[in-house]
Length: 292
Image (cartoon, rainbow, N blue to C red):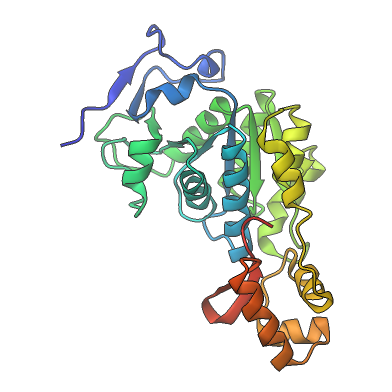
């Protein structure tokens, strides 16, 4: 049986310093997992749509992986979509992650296949008692804690009316840095991030940019910068690689955009899959692997 959750109040020496002075601070929190993660620096929240595209899920995992390797604790809300991709990317990198919940930590919601790994290697946190079920009005409150616990917030794919925007606005009000990953202007899940960019969020395209903007130095930083420069050597493969940046395409779309015949294109795609440059998803849709 799992141990009882750790219960903290503001008078406890382990109370997170970042929760001091925020609007409507919690009067108590419950923890399950590695409570020491609350005392570690730096922390970044990665949030976004529950209905994220394949591109959004890849980018969430990519940023979480790289920033975790650079020493960040990754914070999110364990919701389906971007949140779970960020937690999973962190765990895959051997990093530390905190999930802030909209219900009690004893029965986290939603259920998730990687929940045990997160609990053992990360931390679950909630201001709601252990037996509390999720309620709609809990999640905006949860979002203010995500913003408060982080030094910065990265938003990846968000609709115009999105909980991720609530998190970002809480972060701005608390003086935290807010980053947004730009998306296609004709995509519904880009409307929220475009709105944030108009409101002053910083546009980013790589984890290295976040490290640079936050003036964060680490041994991993050179690796992150050089990783962006990795390209295939073959001319046609380079054309495919460039075409797939920011895109998820099937073989016919790729053939049309690259002007390469389908048989030759399939041969290149097989080789690029084997070398880890591209990933083929359901429906035969190709996209660049997480690290690019």
